[in-house]
Image 1 (cartoon, rainbow, N blue to C red):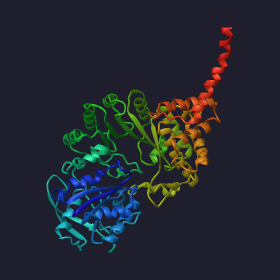
Image 2 (image 1 turned 90 degrees about the vertical axis):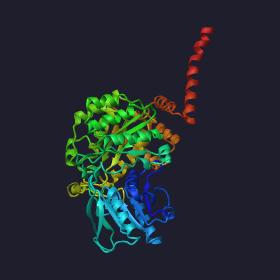
Image 3 (image 1 turned 90 degrees about the horizontal axis):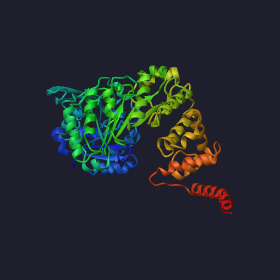
Image 4 (image 1 turned 30 degrees about the horizontal axis):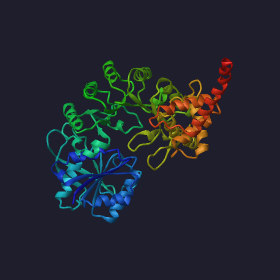
Length: 530
C-alpha cells in the first residue's frame, strides 16, 4: 500500500514531470508514504487507472496540463467510478485557473498555484484525519511554511457548489525554504529521459498569451545550492539539462555561473535554455561562443516582428537588438537556435506573418517553430475577442479557429503549413533542396504554394515516409526548375544523412546521367586514338 501516489500523463516517455518531483521532495516525513508513477498520453485510461489503484492509494495527486487535460478528466471520472473513496487532488495550469474548460468536477481538491507547501499540508491533514474527508469548508492546517520561519496559518478552501471540488489558492512559497527535487530523478530518468531543471520562476513581462506573465516577479533559487544539485546529477550521469526558466538570460549573475558550470565539463552534454532575444550583453555572448557544436540550444520566443502587433499583446519588442543578437548567434556561435513564431495573433494578417517568416529565414538557418495561437487558461488574451473576432476551440489545446483577418479555412491551411514546415525545413533533411521552393527571399509565398500542393497529393500531414518526402519534393520542384539542379540538391542533402538513403529513382537518374556524359565524351577519345 502507498498512501500518496503522484501522477501525470506526459506527452511522451522521454519527458519527465518536474512538478511531481517538487511535490515529492517537499512531503518531508510523509515522503516514505509516497510514490511517483508517470504515464504517457497514448496509454489506455483504464490501464492507467489499474496501474494507479494497484498501489491502494488514499490520495492521488494528478498534474493537469493543456496536453493532457481531456485524458485527465476521463481518468478522474474512471477512478471515482471504481474507487470512490480515493481522494483526488489536482494541480497544474489546467486545474488551477477557473473556469475549467474540461470537466474536473469529480476531483476532491484543486490546488491553484505553486503547490509544494500546500500539498504537503493537505496530505498531512487528510491522513491525520484517519482517512476521513473533512466536512467543513475551512480546514485549519498548522506549520504552513510561507517564509523561512514556520507559522500558524489557516488554509481557505472554497467550495462554490456542494458537488464541486474544494479549490485551494496556494500562496507563493519562499524558494529558499522549499526542498529541491533533483534527487527524485531515478536512474532510469538520468539514463534515458529529459532532466528538467529551473533556476528561477516568474517573468517580468506581461505578454498576454503566456501563463508566465501572471507571476510578474522573478524569484531565484539559491544559486550555490542549485549548482551543488546539478553537480550531483552530473556525477550520476545526467548529460541532458532542460531549463524551464522563461527568461534565463535576464539575471546575468545566474546565467554566467550556470554557463560556467557547463563550460567546465567535458562534452558531450546538452543544455537547453529559454532566452529573451534582446538581452545578450557582451559577457554572455563570449560565453555562448565557447560552447562546442551540439551542446547548447537556445529557445528564443520571437512570436512576431511587428511592433504594432507586439504592443497590442503587451510584448516588448526591440527589433534592432533582436536582429543583431540573432546574427551574432547565427554567425559567431555553434549554438542551435529554436525560434518561435505564432499564427493568429490579434490584428496580424497572414501577409504580416509571412513577412515575419521571410525576415527570420534571411537572418538565420536555424529551426523556426510555427505555432498556432492558443487561448491558455489564466491568460488575459480573451480581452481581444470582440475587437478582433477571436474564436477559439473549446477543447484542448484551445487553439484559434478564426478571427477578423484569418478565416477558419486559412487557419486550417496554416496548421498544415506548420506541419509541412517541420517536415521539410526544421528537420534539416533538405537544407540544400528546400530553398529551391522560393525565389528572391519570398519564403512564405513559395512554401505556402508547396504546402497547398503537397496536401493535394497526400491528404494528410502525418506518416509521410522519408522516401515519399523525397519523391514529393522531386516531383514539385521539377515543375519549376531543371531536373538536374533538383536532383543534385537532393543527392547532396541525402549524402549528409547518416543512413545515406537515396531512393531508387534518384540512383537510376544519376546513373543515366553518368552514362549520357560518358557517351558524350567517348567519340572525342576515339578520334584522338585515330
